[in-house]
View 1 (cartoon, rainbow, N blue to C red):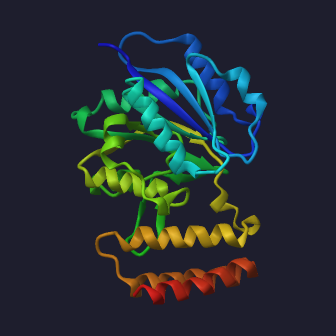
View 2: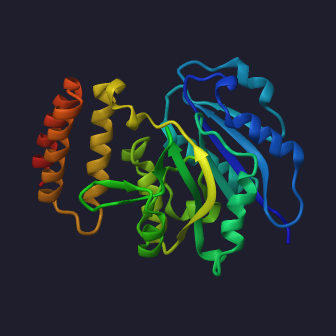
Length: 289
């Protein structure tokens, strides 16, 4: 059996190559090559959303690596669309989605392929995700309640119920299944794109496999104290847009959960710019009830 061809897309913003830890590992995999069953990294797409193009990435460009600068900052959505087009043109079977701050273990390709190889119905698998830790805590995979609460570290229950969601970075997505759910709605340029993607794959009858791999990742939404109000507002808007389309959504339950979230934030964090953003979000909820 031939190796499955993989295109990795690394979404970069405001970083030099030395600050993107996964690049060294990707280059190592490309230099090693792979024959026989397994994943073979065929191409790397570096998608830079920074305002100014970085000349430091140019030496990395080769027949097997592409650098794209998007000065308009189309976000993760634009990067995934570009990667999908290139993967189809290069006849790559899988996409490997990566943020610039994801750290990949050396055996990641092997561990991820094992989740596919050991599955009774591998053709039904649309995505393979690892366990992701942030500051030592499990952040993904998880389940997301219909009123909005995300509960991480529940991979077994989520897989059984078909409601698994995950952080998209380090996820393998089968190219043909990504094409089936594309295009990604403009409302999910960055925030909640992950949840939209996995819900869409599940709705198409695709399974999300959880591999035995573990990946370290940095997650801005876990650093609330330093988050700008504008970013938090974007997250809340995307969250509400995502939940409104979910089966079983009730605005009254979401309103109650958001009220509890706001109250806890006022007690624990006392970050008033974010609390004000939460209060403004009540207006959005009421306007769309």
